[in-house]
Every structure is written in structure tokens, then in C-alpha cells.
Length: 308
Ligand code: CP
Ligand code: NVA
Image (cartoon, rainbow, N blue to C red; front, side):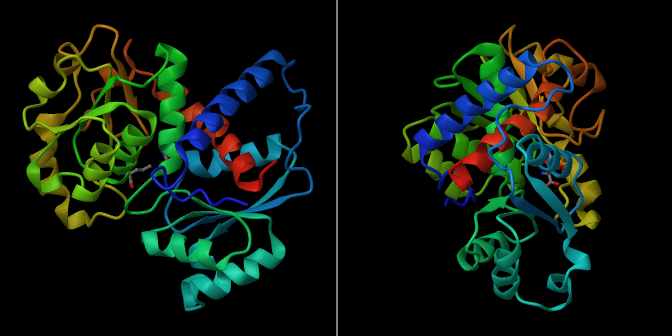
């Protein structure tokens, strides 16, 4: 049994094997007649709890569909409707759920919550986003890059904007998959040092460049995300927008990257804020492949967790 809590705490060979399996499963589905069930039903007879303490479209639907495609069943739970939201401890919730279900995916606020869930559960626990990281997203992003451009190792990824939870997992990904990362954004929104140091400790280059035009030079991949995350206070909205406006990904910025550079965004996007609609819908953008690949990548993550 394996927990999937973060990219940096998961063995790099296991991460690579998951990406390869995700691609194989995606291909196998594409080769089947539309509507035909998969031959492979590795989750048959398994029940998976999907717990959400924050909103979600992609994570909710892709996990639910992924489990069903593999023959398993799901229950989608809102944290607020559970006793968890009314004072029951995480530890007790983990012990109880472990008596009913075979795996738990959780989206929550504090990183400590998902960690405690994993410590106390006797079934695998998957991190479906916390305030600090979003590991499932990066699995889909690496898969998407490689589908379009081949191995990501040695490539230059530029993160433009807020050094948030998705940026943190990108830094973990840089270390584990061997790509370089340049962060461009205001100093007050830099990624935490711990994430930068992890990537550097694995021998990849991490640069912090305040000038977005300089940062994107020679970029193979440009990535951004919302300027205000779900855990950020709405009162900071205007200040963040003012600080982050120079880091918008638009045609002028993309023109400074490599001609075949890709653009990614985990979505949901705020069109014409962190990215223009022209870039979102333009030739560099692979955002909808990225969203689709959440499904395939997470199917591989779940198989690894259960060892099936
Ligand atoms: N990218 C992502 O996790 O999207 P949702 O918030 O819709 O799940
Ligand atoms: N950084 C965003 C990602 C959403 C998928 C958030 O945490 O709200």
C-alpha cells in the first residue's frame, strides 16, 4: 500500500512508471470502440472515498470517472457535510473510513490534514490539493508535456505569477523529473524556499527572475495559475492583481519563448487576468489535453497506491 501525498516524497522511478502506465492506459482506451468498457478492471470490487473541503471540477470528475473506468465505485463527500466538519478528529475519521473504503482521496486546506489522514488510515490516501501542494496536477502536466514534445528532462519550464501550491509541486517535479524551472513573479509571492531548495538539491537549475521578458527566453513550457487561490483571502485580491498584472501570459510574452513552446494552466483560468484568451485558445496552449490527462495520470496513481 502506498500513499500519494507529494511529488518529492514519491520515488522518482515510481513517478516515471506511473506516467508510462498512464500513457499506455490512455492509448488502450483510444484504441477501443467508443463506449466499450476497458478489459482491465483493476479496481473491481473497490470503493474509493473522494472528500472535498474546497470546490473542484476537474479533480472531482476525473477521479470519479477514473475509478469507474477501472471497475471500482466512488462516493463523493463534502467535508462540511461530514462529522469532520463538526468537530470529529481527522484521526478518528481516517480510522472509520478505513473500515468502509479501500482508498481515500482528499482535497483540503492544511497540508497537516492530509498527512494525518494518511498516518491514521489503514488504506492509501491521495492528496487532491492542499494550500501548499497539488501533486496530481503535476503528474498530468508532465504527461502532457511529454505527449507533445518528448522527454521533459533538461527542458526549461517558466512559471509566471504567484508562487502557489501548483508552483510548489512544479518545483518538486523539477527535482524528480529533471527539468529546470525559472520563477518570475513579485518577491512577495515567491515560492517557499523549501520547494526551491528541494529542486536544487536534485541538481536542476531554479532561477528567480523578476523580469518576465527575461525569464521566458528559451522557455520550452510557460505555466501560470490564478492570481488568487482558494485559500487566499479575498481581501488581498486587489493587491495581488496589481502586483501580478505584469506577469500576465499574453502573446507578447509567449513570443519571447521558444517558437514551439507550450502553454499550460491547471485551470480554472480567469481569462484575461493571468492569461489572455488569445493564449488560452492559441497554438501554444495544451490546457484541455492537460485537463484530460488528469484522468489518465490519476488512474495510474490509484493503481500504484493499491498495488494493482
Ligand atoms: N486543476 C484542478 O485541480 O481543478 P479543479 O479545482 O477543478 O479540481
Ligand atoms: N492555485 C489554485 C489551484 C486550483 C486548482 C488554488 O489553490 O485555488
